[in-house]
Length: 368
Length: 177
Image 1 (spheres, chains in turn green, purple):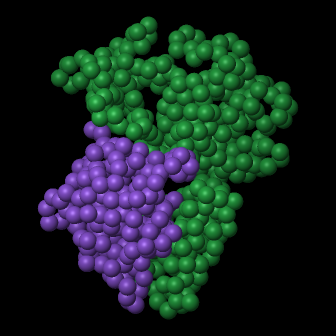
Image 2: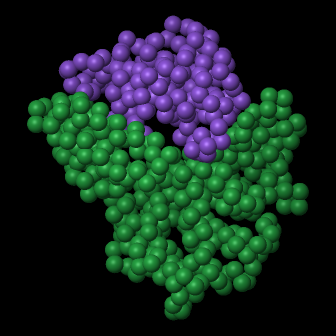
Image 3: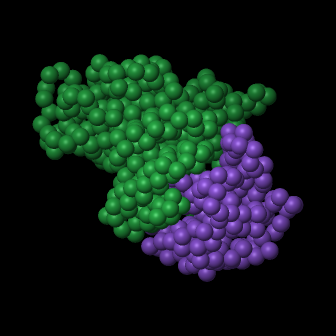
């Protein structure tokens, strides 16, 4: 076979893997592996005849990416090293480095000999604001705070409690689910979070509510990775809890630059299980994507200003723009305390929908 | 001008029929999701002026297909790819698209079926889709982002093609930079 034929065979198997992901998921791994093998052969044959760019680097980048898709990070690492050892065009060199960062991140999701109990979870973070065992403080601390909120909300939901918009955390939740952190490890940046059992109590695998909570949390993160919002509606039936969960996971997610990867590791049945959060912040959907009814089509609005007042009783907030004009925005249940409150007195970008004279909040983030 | 999306399934521009049908399905899912049926018009800012296109397809979107495409963001990207490939057939001088694996999808290169090397003298085709436009996610903004991305490969001296498609009120832009 020629280089072109081998490459096209690789793309054919990649197509089959994409289709199988929907029709027959059991075949995805086999097709992905074949796709990688053909692309690697295409590069090997090409490099025996030529080292012309950009073909050399495109083939290498493609083969390395397919190695990652077929869960062969070591193969990807070898191909990226060959690629960067040459003289790739800058754009392709950058893309090779991005895949290398993924390879390293998956390596760092491993626990490197650190034991995890069933009520513990390892959080790993990687990106431009992360060095070897060091991280910009707010990128880390904000995420720990979000994980704490996620834990308390999940605990309440699993115990069928109504969503609590105001007031202090329940004492029982603090005792059972408050997160405790280990000393950080020099991976990308990794830390073990233990829920409840603050001192030396050992959790019984599979028998503690913290394990149940962690598994529920990770299962719902996997649903978000799939982009399956219908499935999420089944997993978290209550609108307020689901809205809260989605908004918090968006804040936890990588932004794609400062933080490129966020992932979790747990130990179940004596095996390590890794769950990267694959969606970046801009991938999250807050718009209603149901088919459009032309007659009541809501108008989407984007406002920039200072969050200056909140009324938790009416569930409204006030945003003041640079012209000193005030907007009163209705906040749906599930967002005021955990998502909106941290932005008070800050300049934010607020997205909402305007129906008549009312603006309803859809998303809010710091204006950076 | 009529754009018959069904022809994607014939393996146009050197793509496999399987991939073409996959793109066709993504197109029909997104257009159906936004309440459109075959024959819907699409306003396109094309290289030689604005055109009104009629999008035609016969694929049926049943509940099973909707479940298979539950990730509407992914569907939107592939649907935009299907339409971009149909437009590249008309607006580029190329007769072939080469792909390479990137992220969870592909990147696309336009050229001719020749023997000078797989990705030699090929022009990059940057594609993006928007299911339903809003003020922060408008067609114009996305076109600017994609155009900016092509600057990274500007030192090759080759043209780049940018195509962005919006499905809510079907419209798009195809530009060569």
